[in-house]
Length: 424
Image (tube, rainbow, N blue to C red; front, side, top):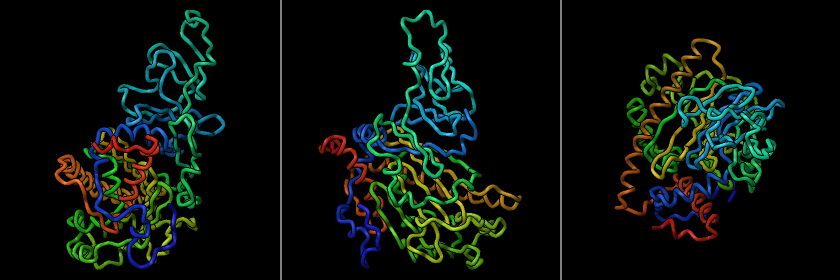
């Protein structure tokens, strides 16, 4: 589906005829049956980002990831040779969750030499090998070499750790990502290690929240009161049209022009932005990160604002021109609930002023995200009424069409071409 040159003047959506322009159904966001199919067709077969290598600073460093839609938990651990491996978080003796602290459903992290089961004390090396069995002589012909931890396909790209729950993934991680994503190779993700993290349980289908961050048509209206009145009025009048939308396989990109915040009229800035020299668009004093990779700012905007890379199924990398980036994760927990995770990454602060600027950006982001999340819960409740079953999308909402089409395509492929079950 990759067609990267800018289309002729007119409609982006019409440039991708397979997406169509008719009103769109949101049946895939209110159907328990479709959610069950997404579990098997998407989340047990696609590459899923579960973290970054900085979370594993030394041999034996580990963290767990709860993937509730797939009904599993995985352990991700740094090996003695520096590589990263992943395993299903289950003891081979009686099926107890192997790594957890006080509450079995909470994610944990740490460093260890071995993993020890809380139930009967079986121990496993960080490479997954079973090393110790309590009262081993009581078992019948037990071959410890046959009872290591169950591995999960795991690979790393630009410091991002991905797993694939399919025992035999159909694509390598590099093949799955494709050129639009791998053209980010060379971005200094490894230098932006100061992380601010938010996590929220949202009462809406995971795709609906992804939709909210795939278009900026809503921003002047929904977030209008978050900005000074003069700026909000100007933004609402101008609307928003991105200079570039791009589709590549299952992934999407929206690239935008920028706003140089400190060059705005003082009446269009908040006093707190002047004090902290920071805000929604990040700190005003951008670090020098050196040359940027070819995959950034493909529209060659001047000034450039941000590139939002939407990696199927549930991961977003949003790179700002000001020298920092965001990631979003949307982890489904039911057909109408999910866990939203937001991470902000900056170069480590060297001064108190830089630290305050980072916190200002993080707090501002949280407030905008809360507005989006609250609205989506209202959307979910009314979609479930089924009073309206088809909704018109404008040209700025092309990425929404693509996400829902790709999700449907993966389910159709899983079913062997029959999607009728999802229409009930």
